[in-house]
Amino acid sequence: MARRAAAPPRFPKRLPRGPQLWDPAKSRWHEDNTDGIFACDLIQNYLRLTKGPRRGDLVELREWQADLICDVLRLEPGSSRRRQYWTYLLLVPRKNSKSLLGAGLAIDGIFDEPGAEVYSCAADKDQAKIIFGEVRAAVEMAPELDAKQGGLLKVYRDAIEYPATGSVYRALSAEAFTKEGLNPSRVLFDELHAQPNPELWLVMNQGSDTRQQPLIVGISTFGVKTDSSGEDSVCYTQYQYAKKIISGELKDPRYGARIYETNDRTRGFRYLDRRVWERANPAFGDFLDPEKMAAVSRKVPEADFKTKRLNIWVNQAKAWLPEGAWEKCAAPKTTIPDGADVTLGFDGSFNNDSTALMVCQVPEPLVFDPDAPEHEVLTPEERERLAAGLNANLRRAHLDVVQAWEKPADAPHDWTVPILEVEDAIRKACRRWNVREIVCDPARWARTYQVLEEEGLPVVEFPQSPARMVPATQRFYEGVMNRGFTHSGDPRLARHVANAVVRNTSRGLMIFKDSKGSPRKIDLTVAGIIALDRACTAPEPEPTPQFFSWADL
Image (cartoon, rainbow, N blue to C red; front, side, top):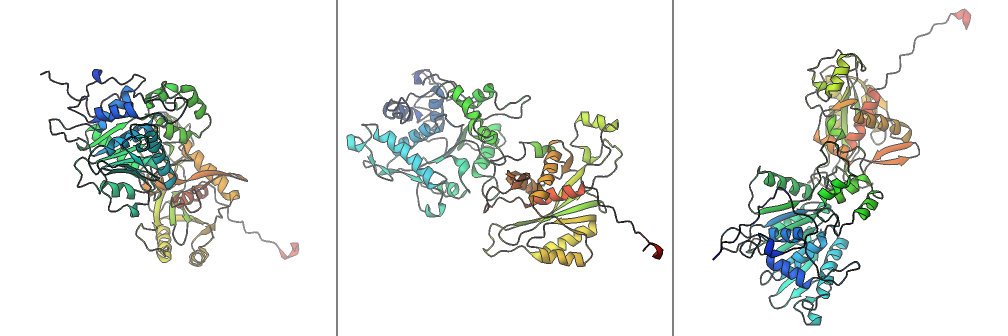
């Protein structure tokens, strides 16, 4: 008996792509190393296209699609028939047949074992209905599958059932608290990046302990790195975990992944370069039309195109700062020495939000020292220019977080900012540094400002009106783009900067939260903007005393 070829590697260095049709006879996949052969046959023999001019035609799997399905259902080496993976992450840009692959894996899951429970999960009810509608349409268009046409599967309003084995398929949305008690055998997470928090993911991962062949598949494009709480999203967390496994940093034989992504850190990268599009999209030039993709690139914002069409992570959906610009200004070794001239920026709220206190060192005359920590962000060209005296001989302003108060995740509903603690933090900062100004918006914290003023502290009102904030925001933006200041690299500040979105006002661009009730905080950013603006503004000179003789009056 001829020895069959070993299965392809778990993480191939070059992912398959292109228009070549699936031919199992030319593949290294076979029934001894994957359960995917049956799944591919099921899809090609019974599933039909549900949209477009070829609606009703049987699906013809491409080689890369079938290879992916076979990898998802890969068997452990040996003859145990036990599958390799319990969790699988598929990240691929839009219009590369994610819905088709998800529908095929869902229907295959119904036949996987007696009493199977198959679920597709989405971020909200509307998306869940779309997923279920795709699977239902595929079943109803296949006479061999639809019970009304003599097939095997009964289609209901919100479920698809295989009566012969008691197996069922349903779609769920993100209200995770209603999903306790399920016993899923296969779960398809659609658009994992859109999950508002990790609850549903955790619930579905903890419900399969009694299953012999459990499988959780996360299918998604890239998206925003953080969720509604400001923490790493479940999709970004899984992406980071998968990358560590692929690189060999971690070992997890039960976790598989295929990640089609774009490396935007390469020299000369241009997101509108069609060669970049081809590398990111396995169906490019096949059923993903280059001309239609070009048309999309002209209609959607850069951040949307990067995440949905090129699989590039962004910090937030409506980018204020270009990707990577903030990180280039980080100088974590730089500290503001005690006694230095500084301004404090304060942005306060009272309940269910956050309060921020930032410090900015005032720029001052500088003798160039190539080993000074504040120069760690300089390029070699900038170092040469500064050493030659060709640049302004000022120490760059430096931003750091003094303290931030955010409502804890487990805090009661009536949580409020600890006002006395905030006031003490401001006093301590004034004792540590030579504070030129405490810059603050008088709204909501008038009592605190009055108390501090009565103590002789230099409180300066800075109303957050367009007249004040627009030029301050512009100065901050230019400082980031020109690396005109440095910052400590504090992750809280980075998160608040990433959360800020920019909108037009009557006077120009200002930053805002992404929505009025959004939990994504930006208070540290606001405090940093006003602190930097005042630190870089020359103080008004003290009025010169004038004396008049009685004869002149």
